[in-house]
View 1 (cartoon, helix red, strand yellow):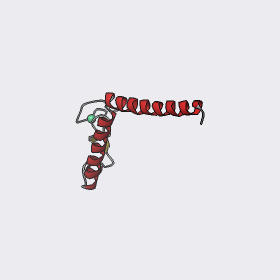
View 2 (view 1 turned 30 degrees about the horizontal axis):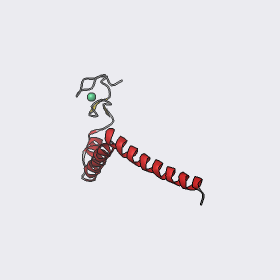
View 3 (view 1 turned 60 degrees about the horizontal axis):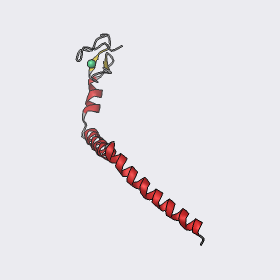
View 4 (view 1 turned 135 degrees about the horizontal axis):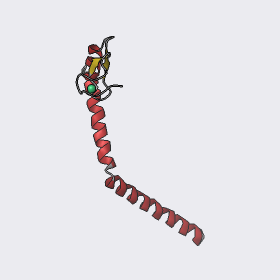
Length: 92
Ligand SMILES: [Zn+2]
């Protein structure tokens, strides 16, 4: 094996180590692992909520032909009203 191949392998190895250290640094700096943990927690909580007949289904039951979900507070309110009954914002 000649010197060029050895140098190339060593350089690639060092670049891989620098990449892994930089990746770990940026994951720490931008709190990516922390956010991932929170997202997994939210996902688990939503899954459990859905499984135990939580908000989505009960909201579905409260909706009928005359009501719609407000895009701001996600509460059902009458379709004929332009302003949400709950949060007071204009729906359209
Ligand atoms: Zn609202």
